[in-house]
Length: 256
Length: 366
Ligand SMILES: Nc1ncnc2c1ncn2[C@@H]1O[C@H](COP(=O)(O)OP(=O)(O)O)[C@@H](O)[C@H]1O
Ligand SMILES: [Mg+2]
Image (tube, rainbow over all chains, first blue to last red; front, side, top):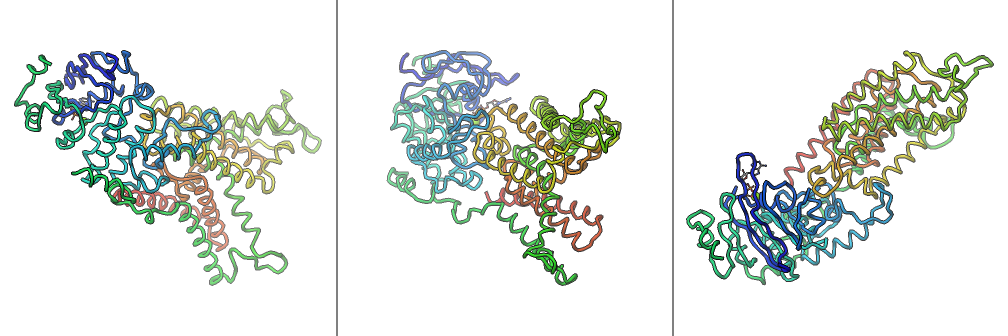
């Protein structure tokens, strides 16, 4: 149990009559990178939103870092050590890179309540360090996000997760909207995280990427986890079969 | 893709894959464009003046007065915008935060009436002050701090109500502050049943005397420029105006922040009320009518985006100067006051159109 970072038991989310997530049992161990795959609408983002406290689950239990948790909101989850790159990024276009990285948790020079003086130098330094750690290259830190390409914005969102000591990083389709080179850059960041032993949940549609990067693949279909396979025990065709429902996988899950 | 190639990508010095980013293409500060507009405008009035009137707009042409510039005109320009300018500072931070405040002109009216009634003298030319509201209670010749605190209290309460309505009932800022606009104007009229309130103490009258309004305007502008740039409060204003959902997800307490933003806007409007009523030595229920629109116009002309997230106090200060130059330019050209009003309307709409256009261009470019 001690090396389990995250565990869910019968995690369930219904939106009225829509059973978006059904009895999901999931485990993630220290240093492990796990991919979540599945068709559009399979419940992947729903799963992420329940873990990160963005929504309140219908049923089930979540353990994180050895304790059972009930996050009231995304901020609590973040304070507990879960950093998330959401599908919609959640960046402020008119702020520069350091301001986005430290949004809501600014470093402060003098504490004067809401009028606290910002420690801009320290935030800039920490930003540079985070960019080095994640191997993200952004030419001008004081430029606003608005003027950046999709890939650069994605990298800023990812660098944000690396700025703070986190125990788990979740990325929901981080490369879905990116070109080839930008995707490669994001994948580099994920490799760097792996080398640093930081556990990761990666939601992705990209088969090549998943087989390149992660240790284990979990497949969602119609709100249920239908496969949980180590990379070396499976291949692309196998995964596609689970995603499309050609293979149901209940037997394998029971045996595992 | 092989690891070696990926190494190469991460090694590029010009961002990820070197895509669609050029440091040289970075737009210069918006304030610079606004300043340029100011210079062009002054030059235009100068040219028209020289050609058609044989007189200079900017420079001193009178023999009996020394100095290079027409100092009198320059003083009038800045003096006439400084009171609305104080309001515009508050309005600027509201707009940056993604809101709007239509109530500031009426807050000026109500605050001027209420504060002035605590700033009156007991006797005028040896006779009891005929206009003193509280003479029966003996509340005359009070120290200047009393009307000042009363004024700030008025602005604070009005601003708090605005902020609480907007933050907690989710009424659009436009509607909430429109309600305050009507209500506060009503209070201004009700306070003395429409009678003007006059004869302030000398210490109250000193607040708006001479160039004091300019000094107060510039000091407050500086203070708020620093606050918006160097404090958490300022950063959160831009963040909320830029992407409220992102700000919420980042843990910023949106509701608290909005209450504070509108409260500060209310206080600034009340300071403007003190300066205005002190300068005029009287308070009237109709004071500050349309000031909210002038203030919004100054901000928008100064590059503050009505969709939030962009702009600065410096921009608004330059915007207010443009405003002042236009008005005194029209006087200089001896054009009717009616034209001033019309042109003011055109400028306001023009500035908003320009802002929309800038944004569309940005959206396409992104
Ligand atoms: N807020 C919501 N209200 C109602 N239905 C929702 C909501 N969010 C997601 N769903 C539904 O839940 C299912 C799973 O969605 P989602 O988790 O976003 O899928 P994906 O695997 O593509 O990320 C879909 O059928 C979707 O329509
Ligand atoms: Mg999704």
